[in-house]
Image 1 (cartoon, rainbow, N blue to C red):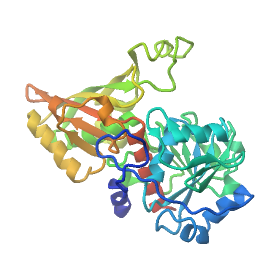
Image 2: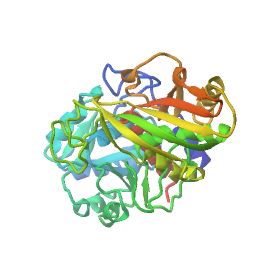
Image 3: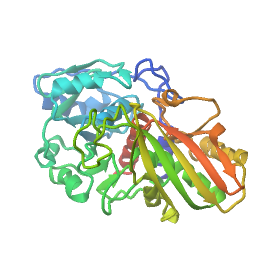
Length: 403
């Protein structure tokens, strides 16, 4: 288990600036890796070849791992496409993405993967392959289209792991449909409902139970919050606290005023600061049980397309001061939370944190301590890219502990 965690704490990435266009944030490094091509009139034959022993060790060779987990992405939206880009930039990945379920069709899936208003142009050769596949640097990925997971061809494709990225199938009944369709396991890229186990890489993923068939990677905000909250609690002891995430708008909001179950989210996203609820703070207790009932918070959705920031205020048991708090963060960022937590000393703004690989970046100049026991911490996070990197990490853990 420990070796699996170590392998994802510092992902093996090639630093040649590829994977997204001109945008570059802190601690980012992605590469496009070449894929050999095997031509065939039958798309299933191509996929079968690529995932065979010959294909994975010969013509198609992304890394050195011989037994790759066959992965399907359900929902090719913001997280689905970010996930594929992040995975594509990894070296020696134990994962092999062979299928996508997207109701928009092949042409749209291919175009939106290649051209992204937030990430820029994908530095890879992306094009449609007939009516049911896309090619990414020669790697053929089958595209299917169904709104009902029960109708998906996971059994025929021998899918091991489904990355559930729709935000819809987040309970056992919903996510379980992938299992009924033939997949072996499901990783939900959203907070799970009910008793679905939640894991945050760098916080509790070392306790991953390979017997679980459905797991959750929590939310992007919980992934930002939990690592530095863990440091605060371990070093200073958290009594209670509140959190506000100033969060970029998401696809769940409305471009113009329109109906929505949340009356505030019914208002135009690009024109308003929209207060709304978030379970991110309470969800920290799912990965750090000692904090149950100690944290709560809200979200303020703002007119930016990406990158968000957490503002946490906690009361602690140990008397401290700002420099000591920042020193604790730096120590953890260099050791057990390397690749997960970062500390920034520069006076930066949100766009500077676009495409950061880490889950959270503490803004050291904004750390405050009042009366020696009330601590305020500001941490930035790319709510799409950084989160998707953790989804890949958790999928790697699943693969490295396959059962």
